[in-house]
Length: 83
Image (cartoon, rainbow, N blue to C red; front, side):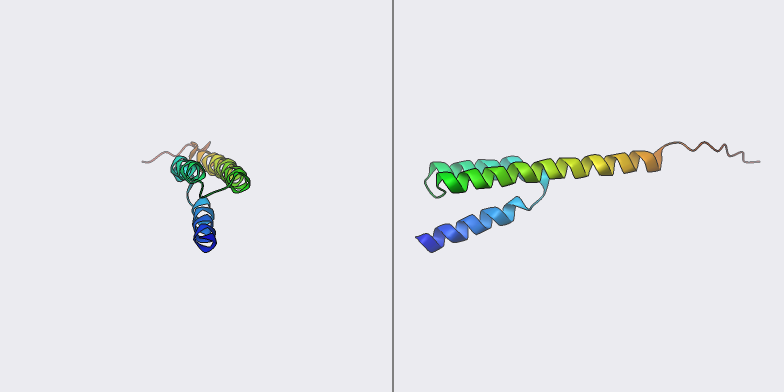
């Protein structure tokens, strides 16, 4: 049973490194595993902390990309006249 739990925890940790949009599904999975006793309180705390950290990092990265995109697509100060 210990190996099964270790593999399950490893799978959840691998899933945490996935895309940010999957955060709610991963959080639901972690909660279900905790409620079913597959993840103890310490593991649950670590998994949730890592999930929140990954979500915050993904949000920050998205904001940076959005800012770069806004800068790259803003109108030019140069006026172009076509004859």
